[in-house]
Image 1 (cartoon, helix red, strand yellow):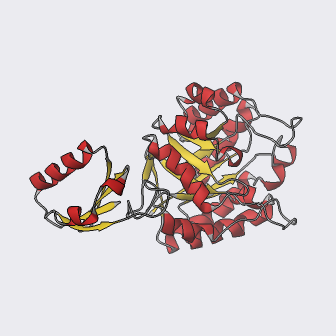
Image 2 (cartoon, rainbow, N blue to C red):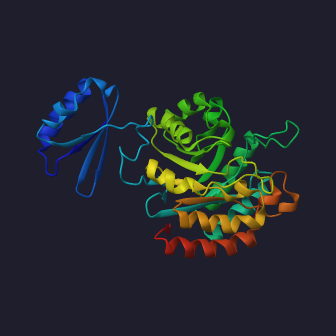
Image 3 (cartoon, one colour):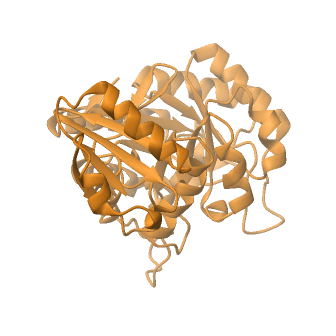
Amino acid sequence: MVIKLRQEADAEKKAVLKGRLKALGFDIHESKGVGTELWGLVGDTSILEDDYLRANEVVEDVMRVQEPYKMANRKMHPEDTVIDIRGKKIGGSHFQVIAGPCSIESKEQIVEVSQDVKNSGAGLLRGGAFKPRTSPYAFQGLQNNGLKLLLEAKKATGLPVVTEIMTPEHLELFDEIDVVQVGARNMQNFQLLKALGKCKKTVLLKRGLANTLEELVMSAEYIMAGGNENVILCERGIRTFETSMRNTLDISAIPMLRKMTHLPIVIDPSHAAGIRWMVEPLALAAIAAGADGLMIEVHNDPEAALCDGPQSMTPEGFDALMKKIRKTAEFFGKTLD
């Protein structure tokens, strides 16, 4: 349920209404825009009569939220959410590029790539330490040692870092990680989502390989319901009948998610196609469709990469792409901080 308050409503009378609602067991999600103040009620709103609320002089209107997701719903929060990650903002008019290797392979590799992507204008550094792979015989990442190397790159460049978590038991290892990534295969790992809801770190939540947009937003709702509202959604391609590329980028997900939710939306064109030359057109198309950010894989020697070399850009290729990204983002009213 969403309560729209009257403009210039008496503050004391609003406080009285808020106290009554909290006494009934409701959590109140407040959203203030230009000339608009909304309260989103989270709880069993079936016990409330709409007319009872409308009779209160501070209430202008009452709206029922029919969708199963509440806190992530744009009806509860009409303004775009802007998340600040150590000074790097994403959402609204703020655009970010997250770049780095699929897997951390050595100190030299991650530090070199981190410096390259920073010089090209990336705002955040990505690097995989724990790698969920389809084959049990494939490279699984450097794990704890990979995290240590990622933090060395963070220290060397000052960039906030993004890396994937596999299980709630690993949370204690992520104290110095700025953005915790939930991979496509863990999108509906509800125990992990609940654990992330109890921490205050920003979470980048990837859409599953065959999940609907509502299922993606419901997974975000799990995190937000636990108290952590710092969630970024990521479309990384879905599985279709097409075999000429790794996945199919669902570009239509961007405007639809924009309508459904207020959360920032990031596109991963590297995993979407799995083909290096396709990263650029998909990245630029994502900006035009309204994305708030991009996640792009960059490796200093893609041919020798232990993971996802065919989709990884070289530092030189990434630098050239960043120039186009900046111009395209600015054309569509976005600013790279």
